[in-house]
Length: 125
Image 1 (tube, rainbow, N blue to C red):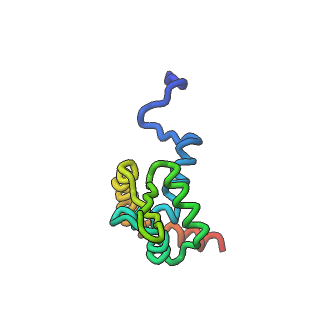
Image 2 (cartoon, one colour):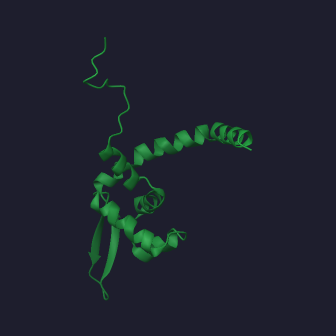
């Protein structure tokens, strides 16, 4: 009889804190921002130009969320006028490997997923 009080190591556990964090750092705009900041630090308007579909409001919210979670940092640049630059943190850089694994998985299985979607959609018509 299995002890149900302690989870097995192979069990996938996604508790509320995990869900909240993953929702905040792996959403649509966060991944785009992280992709840009992995290459180089950027100012707000550079990010807007690099991600043209994002609204100013969504980009602001995304940057704040990522900064709150320690994934990126704001750096005030002493220029005239004063500018703010966003940089990925050491912690943020650790996201690269798991995101790359997820993207590799998606590349590998996307044809099967598309087939499943088509079959599902055909069956629901």
